[in-house]
Length: 246
Image 1: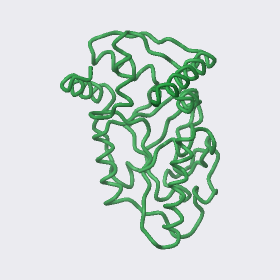
Image 2: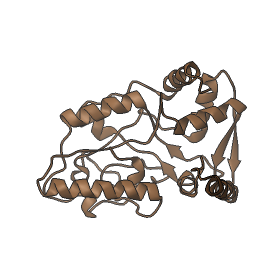
Image 3: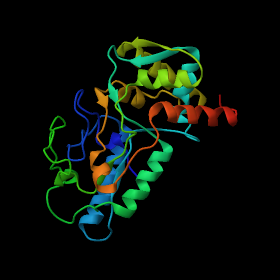
């Protein structure tokens, strides 16, 4: 399993698709995921393995503690919005992700042994919209989402609603995001612990978008997400309360 971050951010108004060329150097995390994909791709091209690659966006749900921090912040009624304009994002509940991974393993078309491919640096610009969603350059790669297009503010408001609260958005200029991340980084080094907001996460949070299109998975895997944001967050909040995480 890889990540949407392996491909890099999306165009502000066009969702990431499997055949879009990755943007290297945007985040360290994304680059590490892309390096892993290329190793799998090389093995598949050599005929050593049959492989598919799954790229989920932001994952939340029971036992996921990273996104739980965002849910906790909604308790205070304020949602930090990196930048002055909300960017489109995709999310997925852990249960939908598990179902999608199982379908990709059972029904997915593996990475082809020849032909053009995005992992061979033959992708299209990230604002290209193909006539056919199953563009050959993205064969063997699947994006999975909850089927919705959202923003971090919409996620925060849905989390607040699940908590029985209301929340407002607080736009944060880039300078403020970098300042907070820098302070967290310094404190983390002194304490010997990874901070919640790293410099790498700060850069990722200010991207023009993290939005992907799961049409290929819907067509080829018969993938059908069952956990829209409101339902998924209600379920996650119930779990977190049950185990004393909220």
